Length: 106
View (spheres, rainbow, N blue to C red):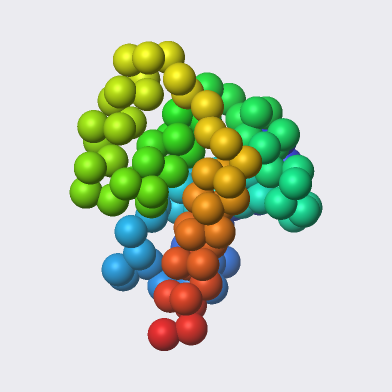
C-alpha cells in the first residue's frame, strides 16, 4: 500500500485550524479506504505496517469511546488484541474523512 498519496501544504484543499486529526491520521484513513468499496477496507487495514495499524486502532478508540478512549486503547494493547471489526474500521474511516470534508465546506 505504498502508493498512497498524501498532502503537502500547497496541495491540501481543506482547513486544519480546528481539525482534530493530523495529516498522517488522514493519510492512514485514506490508505485503509484505498478508493475501493467498504468491503475491501478490512483487507487494506490488515496490510498496514504495525505503526500505522497501531495508530489507526488508537484513532478508532478515540472515535468510539471519546473521553474514555485511552483506557480502552491501553487495555487492547495489554491484551494483545490489536484488531478491529469491519464495522469499527468503517466507522473510523468515515468519521475521519467526514470531519475533513466538513471542515472544507466551512
